[in-house]
Image 1 (cartoon, one colour):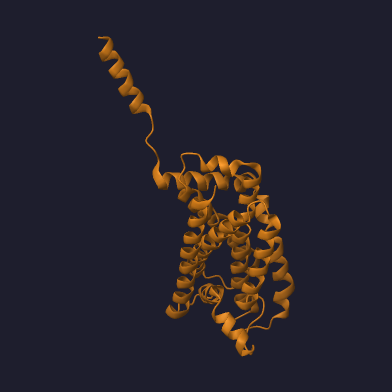
Image 2 (tube, rainbow, N blue to C red):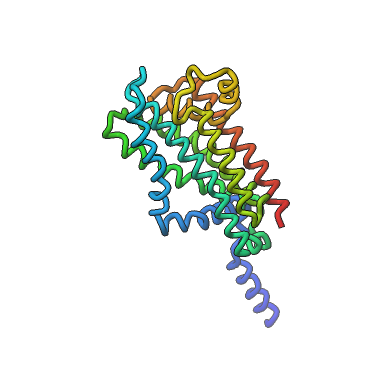
Length: 267
């Protein structure tokens, strides 16, 4: 009788014990954990909008209207892409704070897989990017900006892939720099601004020297920005959008490969 009671008790305990969530569950938990500060302090998303809104206010009036419409139709997609790039590239700074506080080491010895730690953090970058895109579009729509909802949705999907890749690369850089903040910020600033300028985000590159055009052609952000400009104008040209999607997918794949290797090697 005692044995039967013990057996039933053990079986009930086993039934009540939740099964391990696995990679997808771990990734979801990590993403939710990373998003909690964003939802607790939504003002941080608005604060990150100061620079792009200043650029819109100062640069847009200086640009002539283009053949497809107002200057905003050309300029806004570039600003949205710039916001996605800047936001995703800054995320490694959060990991550096966790490394300094010791919380990152505690996560490494937790049951969570190291792959889910990186992928969940990278996926988190999509949510602030979408929020910022909505804010920018809402601000410029009353000012001669033609709204094409379907194109904006597809453009946001392309930027989501790109943000995941840049976020993963930012985490890999933070892991390489560890507690040397100067190294992270030096590399980040050195890489980000040439990417923006070579993509023609702020100024068109028509008439640029040949070497500058070659450098622009080697820049994946160039194709992403071209695709965003086409999509935000309601143009679903297969070649332009296809090249942008390919560049974003390759960036995501490269970022995840590099980030996963860095995360698995971290200690």
